[in-house]
Length: 191
Image 1 (tube, one colour):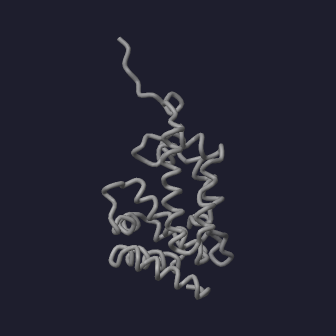
Image 2 (cartoon, helix red, strand yellow):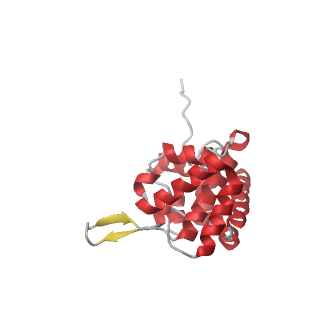
Image 3 (cartoon, one colour):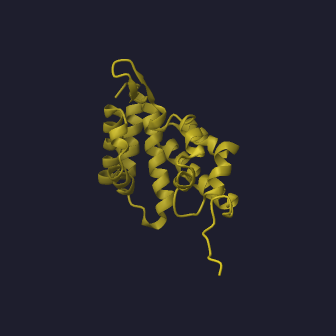
């Protein structure tokens, strides 16, 4: 008697159109937020690498509509080809901002420039709106941040600013948060 086996990643059906729809919806949400934040060009160019063959093919192959394709690719290979490509080309990801520290002789987080922290904020809010849908609240992005370990892997000043913006969004709403962001960007100062 034959036993039924679960299909491996190679046998799973690819979902390029569904993946394209989700990526496009996310990019559109981030673009709107970047415009509201005063960085429209960052929104226009946001995540264009997701349309490259190196990212699109493995992500479409691992798309299931419920989890990140990167997580599913990691389950198959122990790491994600798409994520490795993505984080090395998109400066709004804190993982991009690591370098060799000559004092500790280890890779360490580097403080992100303000414009990329703002884009990261817009990305996180856009992602929550895209993936949570009707369940989204202004607290969603903060709750996701608080549950994860990203804060521990970012430069402390970057993590502090991102958390401040997420808390402001949670407690005071989008209108006030984006007004604050635009004001801070106009000052052209460091954080």
